[in-house]
Amino acid sequence: MAKEVSSKPKQKLHVFDIVNYIVFIIIGLCILVPIWKVLIDSLNRVGVYQFQLWPSQFTLDGYRTIIETTALYRPFINSIITTVLGTLLGLVLSTLGGYVLVQFDMPGRNFLAYLLLFTMIFSGGMIPEYLVMKKLGLVNSMWILVVKHGMNVYNLVLMRNFFEGIPASLYEAAKIDGCSPMGIFFKIVLPLSKAALASIGLMFAVTVWNDYSTVQIYITDPNQTNFQYKLRTMVMDGDTPTTSYNVSQTTLFNAGIIAAILPFMILYPFLQKYFVTGVNIGAVKE
Amino acid sequence: MSKKKEVITSGGVVVREKPLKLRIWNNRGYYIMFIPVLVFLIIIHYWPLLGIRYSFFDYYPGRQAPTYVGFKHFQSMFKTAAFWTSFKNTLELSVIKLIITTVSSVVVSIFLNEMGNLLAKKSLQTIIYLPHFMSWAVVASIFSLFLSPSSTGLVNGMLKSWGVIDPNGQGIYFLASKDWWRPIFYIINIWKETGWGTIIFLATLSGINPELYEAADIDGATRMQKIRYVTVPALMNTIITVLILNLAKVMNMFESVFVLYNSNVYDVSDVVSTYIYRQSFAVARPNYGYSTAVGLFKSLVGCFLVLVCNWASKKTRGRGII
Image (cartoon, rainbow over all chains, first blue to last red; front, side, top):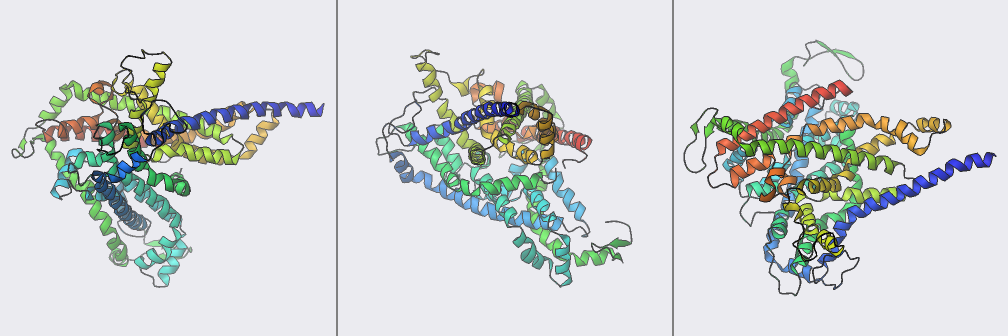
């Protein structure tokens, strides 16, 4: 009798779990199919519509063309330079700002906080920003990507939230020992914030690497564009690289897409936990 | 800040507060550290505010000096059908997108939370977070190839081979069709953002007291009943938070539309930011005054939404969003 009672809910559990797994396999496939299709098409000499698990005519010529197309070099190098510098500038500004904002006995702290918050509520808009950048000589220059993304109020606030979690007694002890604000910053705050630096740094890197609209608005000089912009003009506007190999246009498009996401996809499995940390720093105050 | 003459340190010792000048002097290091932030803040956010004055000017770049025209641009803006279309589209696209991606994130996170096998759960999370890190330019490229009416588009190819559409015909150009553009836009958004949206809900779910589930077990609740009566109520607060936080940002929609739309579907896809972009950079004789005026209107609506959401947030969860 007792056995029957306990086995009944277990049976239900079983059905639920199976359905759950099936649904999630379908969801996983929905996410992966478009990406897999791109990957396989980039390795296929001919363009086909069918979904294949393995290319019907395997070739690396698509990638050879991408590597040999000199018009893609500049955008790729620009993307790397702007991503590295944008991330560095972003980390410098957000750690400095976040650190100053947790100095609760500093006169004017609230004013500085409001100065930052106001920018999240109201902005000048596309044209006033464009005109300022023009005055600064940043129109048609890839440095716009560094300057524009380096100052990110949202990430600064995330950093501040993280610094708030560092016990105030640590600061005070260091102050009593005669440590300067800069000394505390470098010797105490930054070493304790490695996880936040990694996750917020990654957010900056992804934002700059993935940026398309800033280039679209500010940059017309082909030597100053980034890889995302170049890729989109290639695929969507049909600006195909010329190739000496016998491969279809579709192969080239797909190889270009893979090239744009490859650097990130290689690192992604190792970095995933830092991204999740970043979201949770933001959610910590909920 | 405070007028009180006495302050209590973290050690609980009551000391006399130092005079303001001395406190400023003592904190000089922090002010110096804020200077770089201030410089960039002014360049990126505050200097452009001066440019808002061009809303009241005729400004043809490179042709003549701006001339004052008063509220002319606002009057002509409110009379322009294309502007109203873009305004309505912005609200419709972003609100519907927000609702469906939030719903799908909630559903996925609830059932992901029910998954017993940790390895399966972790691998699924890795997969569903993935599209979030692809740029809109990449996502648009992937889906424009996927949905392409040419001989290599998967969707059209399959529809043809199944005989749903004429195998020798043109195929459906999904991204240039007024009927299809919006559903496709929503589907792409679900594809890209559902997984990432689950993080915040999964964090909430991991914080639910297991005793609640044990109590439900004792009452003989089934898995679905436990979801209905324990999990969903526990998520409500987070759902409201996410909706409010994102509602404040609905006017910002730009890149996701820009990379996917084209002149055939302006009626259903044009949003305020793309409208401003075209008025400034894609017309023969742009009037920056007019685009600035539209931008100012957009900023004011956005500002209003943030304040409303902040008020709603204070009402519902006792804490503002700003």
